[in-house]
Image (cartoon, rainbow, N blue to C red; front, side):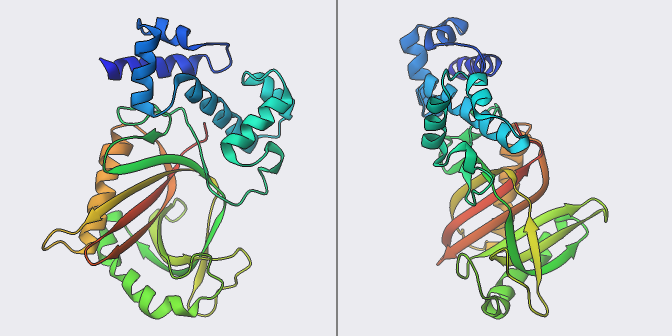
Length: 288
């Protein structure tokens, strides 16, 4: 019952992002008292209903700025702000930057999207054991080694390349932004009709690769960041653990919530003495 209330209220919010609505309007829509609805909404999302509405409006304004050049005053009026300065203050408080500095921003920005599924409220999840957050990621550059793959099923044959790269290749790459932290990038090349598997370090945009290395530029866009901690069971290799976590994320989050994703995803796995953290970023198919 509570899940139905939340999803109906989220749909109501989506339908009224440009209208003047209050908590009592949402509660009336789902036939609840205002106090009961407020408790249910905060328990499910971690935010009050009005905070969520504000975050959703600001995220939509953020995406609007990415897609096209718009006057700040027009955005403010479109998304329920009476004054330009109040919109700018709210935007800066939410994203730690002003609308005018969006193009120069070089850090990831968490967003509240219009994705509503069994486990996703606005593009994030509060499920135990893992965290999921939709975010804008600016253009990234990696330097490393590119491997061709005919299908993702071949990935298990390629993951041992990470250890080899970390031990023998990564020390030869200077100008890294995160030390020896290795990323693997998987993607699809439509013009070649095959997949690629890239192992590398995140580096500066100015870096020029030496002999035997290549640079890969990951496009800016909206990505899902899935993060979970793990502990290896007896007889399970780190490679098998990684593939299992990727499969779980795809089945339980991407397919279950019917999320459309794009051509790229990249991930990072850090472990020590049988336990660690796995982070995965999936590119969403479109903005919104």
